[in-house]
Image (tube, rainbow over all chains, first blue to last red; front, side, top):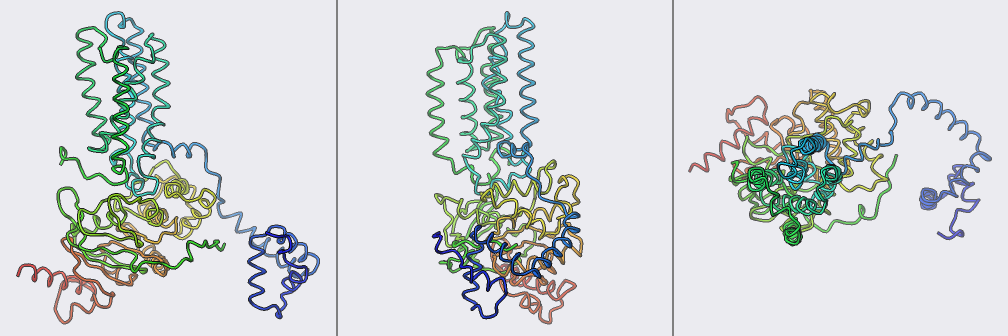
Length: 276
Length: 268
C-alpha cells in the first residue's frame, strides 16, 4: 500500500472523537484500513492516549474486568511436538513398530547365539517382510479408530499413505541395518526386497485392502522362502546378489501400478470378497 | 472475534442445489443400499429419517465422498462426483461425523480437533482459532485439555460435532449426532443446528423423530434406498391425518403413516 494511502491525522481525530459528522462510508473505509494497517493502528493508539482519556480509562476498566475471567478460562497452548508426529504416523502404529523391532531383535539374538553358522541369517530372511506388520496398520478401519474421518478428509490418498509408509521405514530400516551389520548381512542383499515388499503391499492393498495385502504377502514369503531355506539350510536364491536386478525391475513395475490405481486410497473399501 | 471474510466466501454460487442426487445408486457390500434415490437439498437443516437398513448411513457416506456411486449422478456444490474428479476441493468444504465416531484415546480434545483440522488442509495459521471456536460452540471449553478417554459418551459425541464444524463446511453431514446426549445437551445441540442451518447445508441422520420436528427445516424420509417423502416438519405431522397410527406425537404418527402407505403401495 502507498504511504499516501494512510489515514490522515484529521480522519483519525474525527474517528477517535466519535464524530457523528463522519459519513458511514468514510467510517467504513477508516475501519477497513485500520484492520489491515499496523502503522495506522499504532497512530490510532497514540491519538487515543493524547485525545481521549475517557476511552483510556474505559479500556483499563475492561482489562481489569476481563483479567478475572481470563485467569479462569483455559488458554490455547502450543501443540506439543509429539502430537505433530501423529501427522506422520497414526497412534496405533507405534505398538506394531515396537513389535517388529522385537522380532528383528529376536532374529538377531538367534543369529548371534550361533545359529547363523548352521542356517542362513534369520535377520536376512525376515528383513524383506519386516515392514509389513507396520504397513498393515497404516490404512485400515480395524486398526485406526479414526479411519473413516481420515479417508473422508482432503488429505486422504496415496500421498498420505506414502507419508505413513515413510514413518514405518524410518524406524524399521535403521533397526534392520544395525541387526544386519552385527550379523554381517550386507544391506544390499535385503534393502531392495524390503522396499519391494512394502510397495507391493501398498499396490495389492489398492485391490484387497492394506491389512489383507500385508498378511497375504507376509504369509507367502514365510511359506515360500523362509521355511524352505530353514529346511535346506541354504541362503535362498532370491536374497543373493544375482537377484537384485529383478527386485529393482519389480519395484519399478509396482510403482507404476501403485500410481495408476491411486484413487483406491481416497475412498472407504467395501469388504473384500473373502471375508464376506 | 470477527473472522476475516475471504473473496472466495463472498463469491456468488453458480449451482442450483448444494446436494443433488439423481437416480443415485450406492453399493454397501453386496447390497444396493441406495437404489434410485432422487434428492435435492440446499442450505437449511435436513432431517434424514428412515428405518434401520433404509440406506441412511450409505447415503451419508456417499455424500461424504467416501463411497463411490454405482450408478446415477451425485452433484455436490455444483461438481459431479465421478471416478476421475479430484475430490480435495469438495472435501475441504465438507464436515462429516460418521455413525461410528472413532478417536484417539490418548489425544486431548484440542489435539484431536487440531489433527482433524490439519487433515482438512486448513491453513496452519487459522487452525488454533478455528479449533477454539469449534470447541466453544459445542460447549466443551472447560474440557479442552482433557484426554479423550476421560470423556463421557455425550461429550465424545460433542467432540465429533466440533471436529465436523471446525472448517466452517458448506455441507455438514451428521450421522446420528444425538445418540448419547442428555435432554439438555440435545436442546443446546438443536439450537446449534438452527444457527448452522442459516448458511450451511446440514444433513442430520437420526432415529429420533422429535429431533427432526424440533430443529429441522426440512424432512427427508427414505426407505429401501429410495426417497419416500420430502417436506417441512409440519407436513410430516399433518400426514397422519385422522388415522390412528403408531406413535406418541403427531410427527411420529405421520412418520409411521407415510411409511405404511409407501409399503402398501409397493406390495400392490
